[in-house]
Every structure is written in structure tokens, then in C-alpha cells.
Image 1 (cartoon, one colour):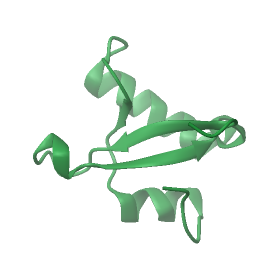
Image 2: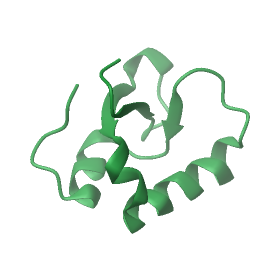
Image 3: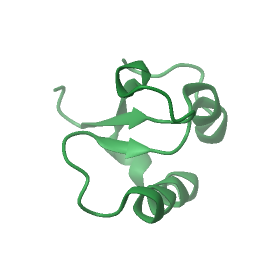
Image 4: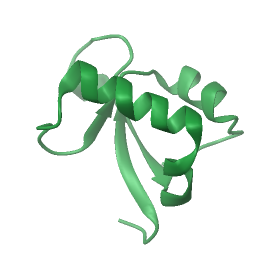
Length: 74
């Protein structure tokens, strides 16, 4: 895991877990209001006790648009 990044699994469509995309999110992005909203949505949907990589209820295209990213570290 590169220093300064948090892995997150984008789980937008409710399909099989191995179909979800895992992205590396810069720690600095965790303070952005849109990211805070996504983290709150994840807490409501999945709870605090998520095992493994943090799941976010958002697909890759939606995540990129919400965060205003051209591309993501994968």
C-alpha cells in the first residue's frame, strides 16, 4: 500500500464482490465534503464493522464524477 493512500472498494451495483473495483484514495481527499458524504452513506448502508477494505456505495464512474477526478490511482 503506497503511503498516503487508503484503499476503498466501490460497490455501486450490488453485484458479486469480485466485480467491485478497488481504488486508492489520497488521505487528503478524506476531508472533502463529498467524500465525507460518501463515508456517511457507507456507514449507514454497511455499518462500522466492515471487515477488510472499506466499501463505498458508489460505482467508479459516479465516484470519479463526485470527486472531480480525471483518473484514480489503481
